[in-house]
Structure formats: structure tokens, C-alpha cells
Length: 292
Ligand SMILES: [Zn+2]
View: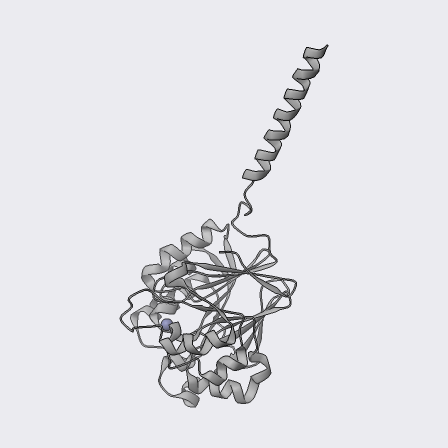
């Protein structure tokens, strides 16, 4: 009798240990790579360029896709995260480090809708990009200031803050000024995606839409160039988190030191894709968290 109860005890301890170990080794990330937060923003490390993935439930948006040479890596990243189709693709402006990788993305996935800056560029990559949109069988849309873009059937929504229709008439021939600047509102949080916009466009946003600039998260404009991110603009945004997307040792010498000098006194936590790799932020119940 005594022996048997000892055996039962040993078995019970063993079972408890197995259960506890099982718990310990249970992955904290769900199989499709998401964190369980309602909405996530992934600033994908694409080297020199930009690619921001927004996931809200089953709804997916991609803002820019990095250079053409980063296309495979972006497709791979989306696939690894269990993504099979995209509700929204936004190309901020026609420069290669923003639209290049989108060619592969359009070829690899079903895309529901695509939004472009209203100015085209006479380059081979832009032509290829338009061909890929054509092959997808969708008509690109050219949003104006104040237009909203829903993220699938989620509650998340983008609002266009710049540059407005006929941007080259307003701002001239620098394609950076044509960058769509988009504010995302989701889960009581907000994020600002700035493309490669410039201080001139920022000034107009300060004058016209100042109250909409304040956001939890800022994708810093133009890979941290001093041609954007004016002191006044950054104060308007006053972000908790800022992400600078660039490649280490890039030929432009970006990011510029001034951007850090302006953001650090505000207490902003700064991420750099060149240093930190892909940065994933979670948006839930008014709080932004850092997943990786
Ligand atoms: Zn760029």
C-alpha cells in the first residue's frame, strides 16, 4: 500500500513537472507570427528604403515595399507572417526605394486596392510598377487631403494629410514632396507615415492640420534626412516612438544627427532599422507596445 502511494506521488510530481515545462516552452507568439495585439505595425528592415506593414485582425496594409532588390525579402516576410492577400497597398511616391519592392509584392499576392501619389515618374521601375498594377486588374486611386482609406473591414483607418491633388503644381518637381502622408487611427492609438516628405510640405500640414499631427508613432520622414522633420513639425507630432528606416553606411549619409537632437529631448524612443532590424509595435486599448 505504502509503495503504491509513493508511486502515485512520484507520478503526480512528474505530471505536474511536464505540464509546467510545457507551459514554459509554449511560444508567446501565435503560429502565424502575430503577437495577439489587435493591430500591429511592422517596420520591415529593407535596407535603404521603406516598407511598413499594418495588420489588424485579418486585414493587411502595406505602405511602400523597399527597393526592387528587397522585393523577395518583403514577400518572404509577409508569407512568414501568414499573409496571403493584402487589402490596401499604398505607394507614397514614385522613388525606387519605395515602389521597387512592390512589383514583387503585386506579383506574389492578391491586392484589393492600391493608392498612389498623383504624380508619375518617367522611369523604367515606375513603368514596371504600373504594369504590375495592371496585371493585378485593379485601378489605382489617387487620394486627396482629407480622404480616408479603411483597412479592410477593421476599425483601423488611414487619413491623408498631404500633399493634395496636383502636387507638382503646388510643390514643384521634387518627387519627395509628392509623398502621401498618412495618419493611421487604430485601437485608440495613432501613427504617422510620412514617406520622404519635406519641410515645405510639413509647414503646410502645421498650418492646416496641426491637431491631426499628434501621434503615438512616427515613421520619420526621408530616412532621417534634415530636409524634413523640422523642430516645429516634430513638436506637433510629439511621438512616443519614432522609427528611422535606412541601411547602415548608405551613400546619402543618412540619418542626419539633427533628427536625434530634436527627438531625444522630447523623450521619444527611437528605433533604427539599420541597428534594430525589423521593428514591430503593437496597438491595443490606447497603448503602444514594443514586440521586437
Ligand atoms: Zn526614400
